Length: 447
Ligand SMILES: [Zn+2]
Image (cartoon, rainbow, N blue to C red; front, side):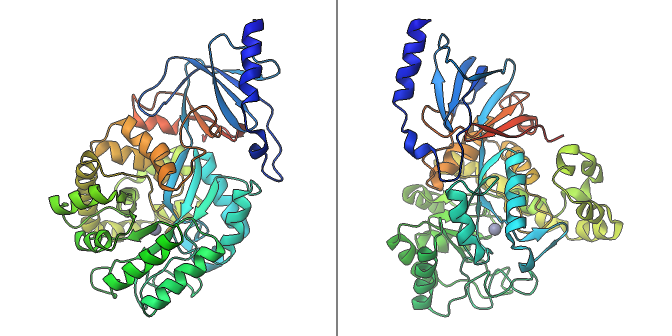
C-alpha cells in the first residue's frame, strides 16, 4: 500500500498543474473511476482504474489507491471519450424555426449544454455565426462558458448571391461574408483570423445550378490566405465535381459527403495523397425524411429529449409529413451514395472526421443527429470501433485539439459513461449514464 501511495504521489508530481486551471474555473475534486472498461481507440480495455484530477486523466495500476479521491464503481459500464462534432451550427435555430435573431448568448449556451448532455464535449460551428461568436469562443476556450467547448468558423465565406442562400435560410449580412473577388476573399479570411476562428468555412456548392458556384480562383484565394494564417479550410460541397474543385484548390476538409456520384479513383488518390479530410454528414439528408417515414420514432425518449414541443408538433403535422415524403426521393439517393462513398474513402486511407450539420435547420436535431450519424456510419460498413475513433480522436486531430479526444494519461477528463458496450452495438452510445467534462460530472442519463 505504501508503495502504491508513493507511486501515486509521483504520478501527480508530473502533472503540469498550472495549465489545468483556466481562469474562472474551479478544480473539480479528484474522482477515481474503478473497474471501468474504456475505449482505447481500437477496443474496450480490461477493467481499469481512471483517476480524474484537476480536470485531467491518469490511468492507474490496479493496486493504486489514491487517498482523498471519491471512488465510483463502474463495474459493467463502459467509458468513451466525449464525442467531438466537427460540423455543426450553433445559435441558428430555436424550436421549429431558424434565423439570425436566435444568435444570442442564451441560445448558444443552451445548445452547448444540449450537446454536452448528449455526450458531445466539443462542437465546431461551421459558419452562419453572428459577430458575438468571437467573444463566446474566447470565453469557452477560457473555461468560462458552460456546455461543450465552442469552436467554429465565424460567419464563413460564400459567393455573392451564392450559397448559403440568404432568403430561404433567413440569413442576415453578418452571418456570411460574400467577397466580390479574390482580393476581397483574402481580406475576408484575414479579418476573421484576426477576430479568432478555428478554421475557415467556404461554400462551393451551386445548389444544383440555382446559384453561382464558387470559382476555383476564389477557393484558391481562401486557401492561400487561410494557410498563411495557419488555418484549415473546410468546404461545403454536394457533388463530385465540387469536391474535385475543392481538392484541386488545396482545401483541407470536405465538410459534407459526395452525394451525386460515386467517387472515382483519381479523386480518391488525390485526397489520400494530399490528406484531405472528409466529413460525410450522412444524417443531413436523412433528416429530411426519417421523421416523416417513421412517426413512431418521435416517441423515442432519447429523441424527444432533444426536441421542443413546437418541433414535435411540426414533425407530427400530417400536411408537413406528406410534403416531406413527396420531396424525399433525391434525399434517399443522397444517403445511399454518401454511405458508398464513405466506405470507399475510409478504406482508401483518407482521414475521416465526424459531423452531421446539426443545428443548420431545426430538422437537424442537435444531440440526436450525432448518435444517429454514428449508426449510419456503421450501416455504411465501418466498424463501431472505427466510427468511435473518427468521432473522437480523429475529429480532435482535425480541429487541432491536442488535449482531448482519447482516454489517455494527461489528456482532459472529458468522458461519457455508458450502460452498455458501444462496440457490441453502436446504438449503445445513447445509453448515457453520466457525462464528465474536465473531470466534473455535468450530465446524467438522457431519459
Ligand atoms: Zn453546415
